[in-house]
Image (cartoon, rainbow, N blue to C red; front, side, top):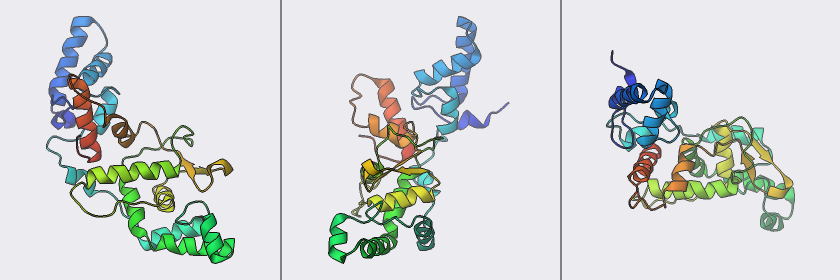
Length: 242
């Protein structure tokens, strides 16, 4: 019987159909369970998380980067306004106005109002962040080990430079725009005095785009499995392979 996953391919290039047959042969020859054999075959073909995770993330054969990015949602000005109404402290700077803007406008309240108007005027930054966030997965609680919004906005900018390498457009994303996009995308956040204008989110460190960031600069010389893994993650998030 044909399985819907058969059209997918592992990073090694081996089809799911053939990999499934490999797993059955491995189970018969070693006496391990089929599920354990499938996990081993998935790892051998460039998916260290195992078979189940591979079936959730492997792109269909022949899928293009354009098709992968086609469904990325976009925010409207009314979406940004809705977040601003929900979060009265949010500005383009982040959690509250900057010290320099307070000095410029003469008061905290005036600087806060100006910073909120500034965020509303930069819808493009929110949508750039949202494009990055489409490759970030949620976890149940806020992740204290992951960077703050300020660190993540730099990761987003790096990602956008790799995706839009042939485009001259500006890839800058402000801290506040990143926070706004993350809230719109349904992430939970936590602000603390020690983080200043930055916040933390319930984002999983195992998300595809973070896995890609960790591996992209590693040398794959003499390591075909690592090369396959790098190529797979780059394709998954729509980035170029370095």
